[in-house]
Image (cartoon, rainbow over all chains, first blue to last red; front, side):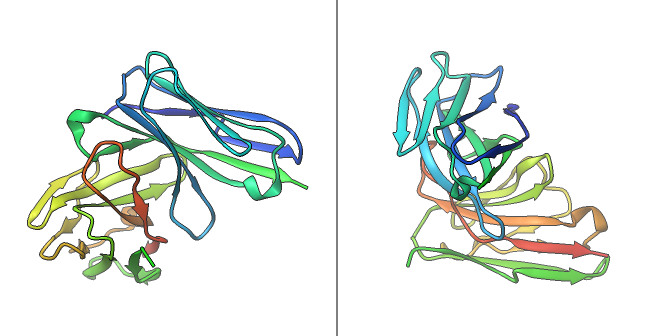
Length: 112
Length: 113
C-alpha cells in the first residue's frame, strides 16, 4: 500500500487568510483526488487531477499536481468560515482499478 | 436524487453480537467499497467489489465480511465484533475507472463495548 502524507494535520486561521495544504508520497500516481468532509457527512469530491503539473481552480481553491505526479497541493485564497472541514487527498493507480489510497487528512478551522 | 444510503447511522452494541451495516446506491455503479475512518489514520479500505459476486480484500479486512448479491447493495458484516472495531464506517460507490469520483454515504458510527 502506497503511503500518502498530508500536512499540516491541523490548521486554525482567521477569515481572510491564505493557506496551503500538502499531500506527498514517494510513489508515482496516475491520479490525485481532493475531498472535503464536514461533520456528520461523508467526503465529497472537490477535484481530480491526472496530468503532471496540472493546475485546476475551483473558485478560491487552487489544486496542483506535481510534475513527477508524487505530490499535490491545495491552496485556499481568502479563507472563509464555510471552508472549515477535513480535507483529504486520495491517490489512484491505473493498475489498481478503482482502489484509492487516502492521506490522513488536514483539519481546517476558519474563524470569523 | 443520486445517493449512497447507509443504515444504521449509529449503533452501540456489545462484543460478540453479530451485526450488519447495510449500504445501497441508486446510481447503477459497478464499484462499491467500505472504509473505516479513525483519527489520524484517514480512510482505510476494508473490502471492495468490482461487480456483482466479485469482492476482494482491502487494507484492513480482518474481522469483516461482505457480500454483493445485487448491484445496488453491499452490506458489511461483523460476525463477532470486538472493541477495536469501534470506528466510523463509510460505504462508497463509483463507476469503473481509476480516476472516477467516489460517492460516499453519510457514515455509520459503531461503538463496540
